[in-house]
Amino acid sequence: MFIRFTILIVIFCLDMAFSCGTCYGDPNSSAVNGMNWAIISLLVTTGGVLSGISFSIFSIAKKSKKYNKSKEV
Image (cartoon, rainbow, N blue to C red; front, side, top):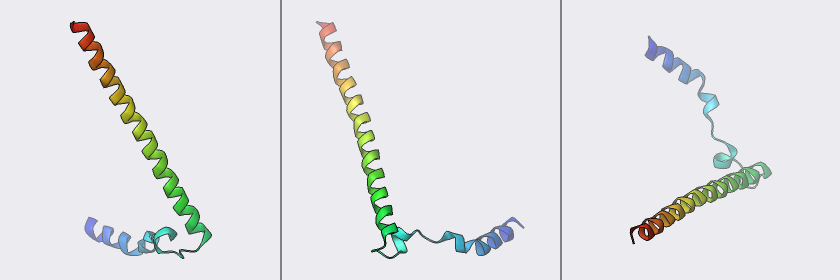
């Protein structure tokens, strides 16, 4: 019963599963260009934040190692 219901939902809702204009749209459209710039800006933002977090962790580890060495002597 559940499998039949799932198949019916997939068949009737298939038209909602189309891709966005970035993948299958007119490449010269202004909406597609805006979407491409939005994707690029999100990737740059995410990469910047992750780089900052990585640098902070590396910096804290380096300071901790230096502190532990100075405490041993």
